[in-house]
Image 1 (cartoon, rainbow, N blue to C red):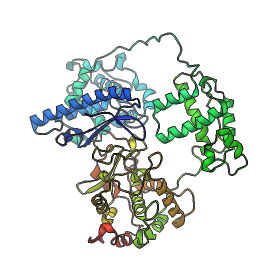
Image 2: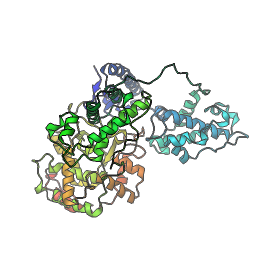
Image 3: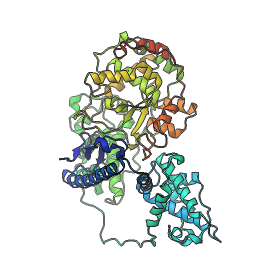
Image 4: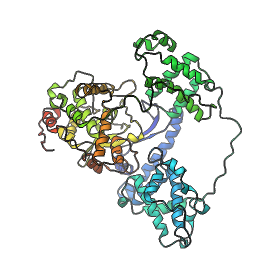
Length: 601
């Protein structure tokens, strides 16, 4: 019997169910359905799991019904149209800071009413109906929408009123023209070209609007007497509430708890409402006395003893580290203030000398000459120099560098990849970047992505295909491996690439420059620069590198599907790298045994 699955890193419970093979067309081809239950409480998870599992079973049954009736479990054209409409009007924001489904519905009803009013005998609205691009801009900027003068109801009618008027109130086909406007927005949102939208979409939009009631403005609900303030809430209780609500990563929670422990060691577990700005300033000043590094045994000492022991130890802690320490306490207080549990946020305005969000050492892009010099190194041109007796093998560094160069992917995204994430679609090899593990993969494997927008597919460049990337993956599968880079093992918080990051940065220091702004992460900046020079739009470049949101437009991300994404990737000119020398050297690689390496570009 299926039960909630506990994520080993975050402690959050999930529904994880294998999808029967014959039903997968109904789920976008996925083999696994994974849904966060958004709780770390086992009792709550059990209840939420029953609800989610029952809903999934209904979806399975509906897919089986379609399979029996039509021979395919996939949704019918009508189902597809209804799913597109529901996703647009009920789904989350398209990108951070945009409108959610309810606000998109409000905007659509206002715009449709405005367009229909203009199709009446005497109608002339102001402002005029929005152009397609302007509508899309409003959709992706909630602040702009909320201050937009067109948000007011048309002719003082609640949104959706004019849509429900009789057809003879408008010019011929007026309703169809407004539906077309809505369909254009749905096409953008779903990432499907307008020409490929299901022909039943217009009817689905009309039915959805017909089913929406017209509501008068709601009166403000009166609030029961009493205050939200929690004068007796202590800092440890606040930390628990913050952790439950925000569900930070295990590493972040650990670091913040350590900072709070030091604060409490200095002041006691005080009430959050009684913390003063002076407390934070005093904590900052004491923490400033800590050294940049200290023996491991000293880290277990109480905060005040650590400070006293290392008061004369130099160099001192860096501003970003100090900011993270003080920022943890500020984060708790800011959270409490937003919840109206404390009357004022005393954490505002605590300055850290030398700290700046935009200051410090930020990664620089690598230029063409630096990249060419790096990839002319023996790691790529003389495989006899490879070492496998280190924490990170030369073979792993070889592929990490090549993948980062040609995709701009984060090192942890690459380092945590499973062999099952390496997939083929037609002529395109790609890596599926996600945070789920299927039931037939190793149970001790844990994966994560930086954020929801990071889930995407990354096309593998043809130059890497010629070097034998697919054969490399096949060799590992034949050896019974699970990970794409088996020598990368998870650390305390599940991250696999700590040592790989160190090794790659040492190599950059040695071969390119000791400029500390040049490091492995520079490949992300470099990729965006070269993509821009190649005429690739920001949206497509962001999709490849993991900054664009995923929508229902397919597993291939938002707007651009995999084949087109691969074509865009190959617009970038990597000719300054001596691929011929790298290909020639790769002929002796174990995965290329008995393989003729092509010479063409």
